[in-house]
Structure formats: C-alpha cells, structure tokens
Image 1: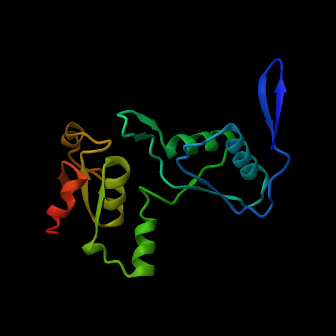
Image 2: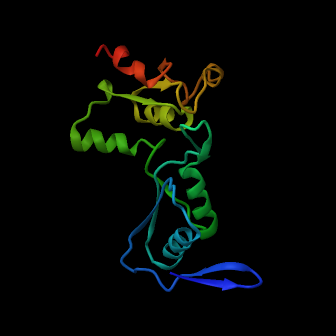
Length: 173
C-alpha cells in the first residue's frame, strides 16, 4: 500500500494490488481500523472472484470500561458493505450456525447449554434462535429498563442476572 498526498483533496491511499489467494474478508471489530485496511478489504471484495465476505457479528457499539461506547463490528461491516456493494454472510451472533457447529463437531447438547450475554439483540437472540436457554447480564449494554420493555419474541431472555459475577452462584458452582 502506498500513501499519496494531494494538495486539493487530502490524503489518498493507493493499493498496488491484492493477493489473489485471499478467499475471504472477515468483518469484525477492529480497534486499529484504518483507511488502508478498509481500502484493501474493499479491493479484495471487488476484485477477487469468489471472495467471501463474512460478518462475525453486527454489534453497533461496544461498551468500554471507561464508561463510553465505541463502534463495534457492525460499524466496520456496514462500511464494507456500503463501499463494496457486497452483502456479508452472518456467521456469528445472532445467527445460530456456531451453535450448530458446536453441536455437530463437539457433541454439545443444546438442552444443557445456556447463552449468557449482555445484549438482547445479539446474545439473547443468538441463544433463542439456536435453541438454547438464555441469560442476560446487566453489566454491559443492556439495562433493566430495556429488559422490562421486551415482552415477547426472540430477544426475551429466559433468565437475568445483575452481573456476570453471579453466574457461578446461579449455576450452583
């Protein structure tokens, strides 16, 4: 990748080519995302025949320990979809394919599994769609008020805990 400077339009990025052996672009949260990385991914999607575009999840925001929320994987995926005109295949939450793979390859029994997470729209929906019990914890994105507003559908958790620290006690550990 070569950076070019233009006096009228600001910085530009010129990518000298893409590796034709690349089989897929995986869209995920990236704390060091740059214009250079976005450009390379878009060129791969646009120029490599059969290059798959896989989304890990579509979380819009990611809560941080500093009390703020920052762009999550959904922001990266949306940018790549918009710029490449290629729709990503959702392989992560809330699509249940990972639960199916765990069941098939590792003998996981869905009847003995619980999906624990802090997001109603991805974690809880993931568990519901995959046929496992769900538990929302209130130490991340979801508030008690948000849970109380969800009365039906795939975002309703089976259980709820104040924090992840309570999981062991709830499971009798």
